[in-house]
Each structure stands twice: as C-alpha cells, then as structure tokens.
Length: 225
Image 1 (cartoon, rainbow, N blue to C red):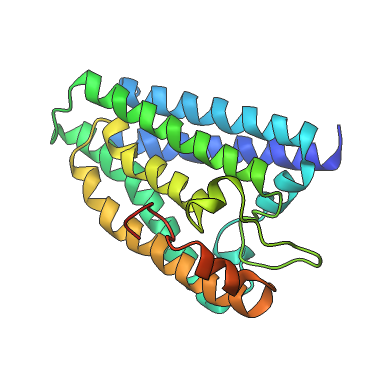
Image 2 (cartoon, rainbow, N blue to C red):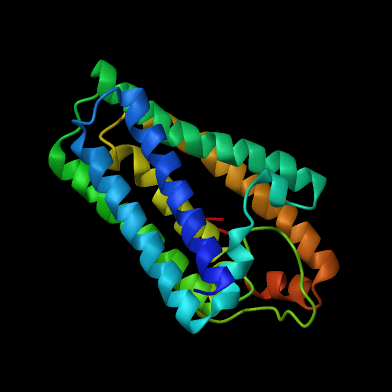
C-alpha cells in the first residue's frame, strides 16, 4: 500500500469515527435511521471518490488531505475555517439533539429527499475535483497552476463551494431536523467570507485570476451571486 493511500484511508476512518460520535452522541440513541443513512452514505461516497482519485489523479487526494484551521497558512483563513468548522459541527449536533428531545416531526419522504440532495452536493464536488486537479482543501497557489475556467467554473467561480452549500444546507433535513436549518444562514456567510478572502488571495497570487473574475460574473449561486 502506498503512503498516500494509507494516509488517506486512515484519515477517512478517523473522519467517519468522529462523524459517528457527532451524530449519535447528541441523539443518545442508535435508533436513529436518518443518521445511519447519512453516515453510511457519507462513508461510501467519500471512500468511493477517494479510491477513484487515488487511481486516476492522486494529486487531488494529496492536496485535500490537509484540511481545517491548522492546515491554513493565511491567518484570516485560520479564523474563517474555525468558524466554518464550528458551523459544520453544529449542523450535525443540533439534529441529534432534535432527535433526542423530539423537537421536529420531519416526514420520512422529506428526510430521504434531503439525503438525495446531500448526494447531489457530493456529485457536484466530485465533478469539480475532476475538472480542477488543483482544488486543494486549503487556500494556496502552486507553481504552474493554471486558472480553470471550463466545466462548472464557466458557471460560477467557486463551484466546489456551491456543491458544499447544497450538501450542508440539506444535511439537517436529511437528519430529520427542522431546527438544524437555522445553521444554514451562518454556514452560508462562513462560506461567503471564505470565498471572498480566497478571491483576494488568488487575484494577488494567481496570474489571470482577476481577468477570470471579470468574465465569470457569479461567485456561488448562478444568476444570484
């Protein structure tokens, strides 16, 4: 087994374990089918995409292994990623508390529809990663890195964040919680803060990026922003 494959699989295993704690501990129950469905789908999807890129474009996996506030080199991004990470944790924890205290009564069909939306968000992220091998989990510019303006990048400047917004925005419904939807607003502003700071960084450090921003009008949501 290559070192990259070993590190990526260990990282996936740790993430899935952490996800299980966040899902089931606040719920204080394993009788939570929405959480099981979400957890299994998350694990299968992330594992399948990791295996795919290990085979076809291992640089994508390598660039996305370092993630989170500590991995960022820009001070502002460390702060932003701390906020975004906290929003992600609350998106998972609040539905668990909701399940435990029976605050919401989300019908099964709506939870399944939310799960389908989460899968759609993953699919968007997968397509973006295929289009842009330089889509790292941290804000940086590498030598000879080009400006990608094809595929989903011809529609919005930050299509990976668009996919992430779909995935995260529908997570509360997938987990059977209406109260978790309250976290959509701070999550959106966290992502918006990150991409605006990223644009300033890329405009300074990636040749041709400022011109790309002029050509591609929308940042995150087509025809809106």
